[in-house]
Length: 318
Image (tube, rainbow, N blue to C red; front, side, top):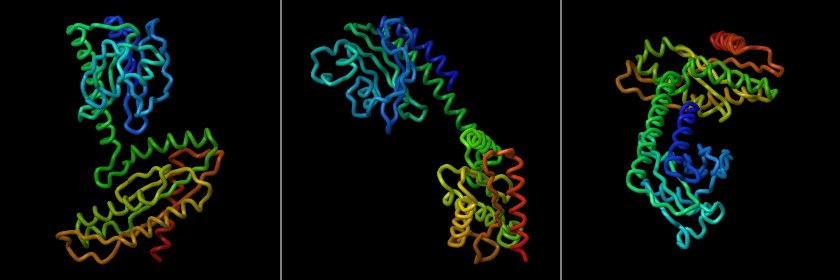
């Protein structure tokens, strides 16, 4: 997206210059936070050449609001003396009497934001200039399509298709980020390793569909049991991992208990199973806390938790 923003900057600057406007923008819309400038023209006439990051509230009576609500271009050549804009801060505070904007849409039709120009003088843009804005809009929407395709491909490459959790590559990427942050802010890191017991027997006795269902059940139990700040993933055939910031080992023990309780209460109903399923998936687990200052890397942390998990598995088989 950073590469796109650099391109959008050039688009906004050229658009503003060609229309002779005071300023031009790409405004991003968020249905929870409001309207925020993502790109602003860098011409000398623009009084707001810096991106503040401050969002305009959803209920603010600004010009872009109409574009978003109607999902259609809107042109106001002269807002002076019009009651509908009496409380528009862009008119009353910034003196923008003219506005021309068009919606920017994601490929699915949802609104990303607007591409727009403002002027402190009344305007009379002729049809060719209005068409020009459509051309600039198409350039930005082409980038939005590329960005969405990139995100889809990245999600596919980082997601386990069976459980919907992060796969090993996705988990490792997020884990390295967590560890860097933990070292910077002096957090303790906790790692849990889970393993579905008797995976081969699930497949042999009930069928592979049952084995897959058991894996999905473990994945769901984990995602339902961890905190929002934790990350989890399926890191092997029947192996899962959790990593997050902790105070002590008790935080990890709480998660493990929640996962076991969740699995104890599920009922797997698999059509065409080899035999009726009268048991629930069981897991072995290993947990370790790495107190700051953290000297271990990701691979060392995983190895320690993995060893703890195998010790738990051996004890459960006695």
